[in-house]
Image 1 (spheres, rainbow, N blue to C red):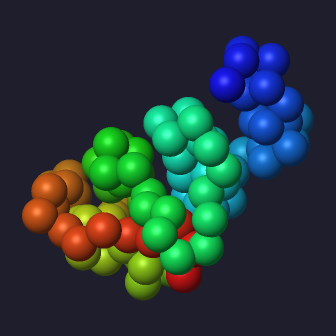
Image 2: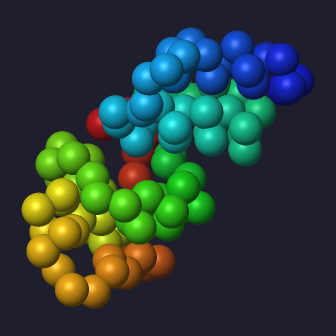
Image 3: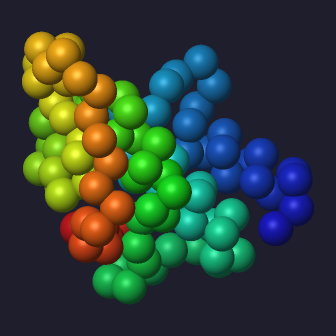
Length: 98
């Protein structure tokens, strides 16, 4: 996929001046970058590289329900705990569309 195509996809998924509110937005772009195609319902998995990075930040409750096996922490727990969350590399695959 070309640089321009990536930019168009990024603008469609992450509108200008708005942050992402769900990890799936970023996972969609990551999937297209790594796989060279759009994700499909069922077999498309969230990149483990992306999940590893997301664990380092507090996450919304719904995301933690979907990815708790990765070590992700909800906001309150993230800031309450004294230690940084640890990524669980042995977590099961997380489907992009659940």
